[in-house]
Amino acid sequence: MSDPWPSSDEIDRRADRIVALVLLAASLLVLGITIHDRRERTLAAPRPSPIDLNAASLAEIELLPEIGPALAARIVESRQKDGPFRSAQDLDRVRGIGKGTIERVSPLVECVQARPR
Image (cartoon, rainbow, N blue to C red; front, side):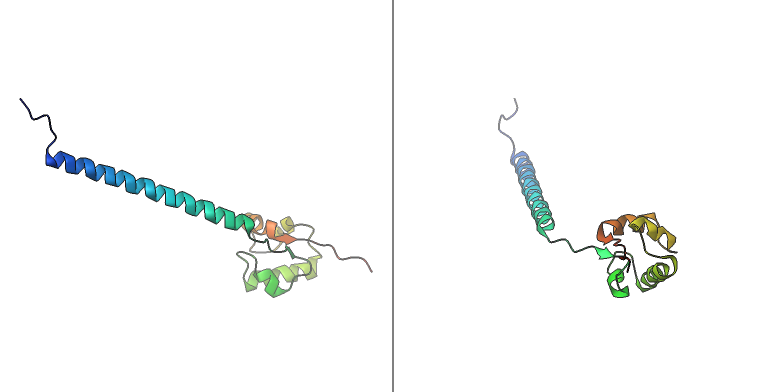
């Protein structure tokens, strides 16, 4: 007849599993709290004012994601040559700006029309 009590090796394996599960649960709890805290801080953070594509300086335009000095210069050049932008979608007329860039900068820009004199 076999011994009804588990061996010390079985007890050690079970204890190892329990410790691993407790550590996993604690890690998931910490991860959930961290994600929640970051989401709360992101929602509470003040949103920057949109950049007016029709009045912004080169330096202001360069603050936009994926817009460096060369693209900023092309945006200003297009604004001077082709007239004011009506929407962020008009950025497609600028060489080097594609749909992805337009999608990323759209929430960050506005196109205020110049008032007639």
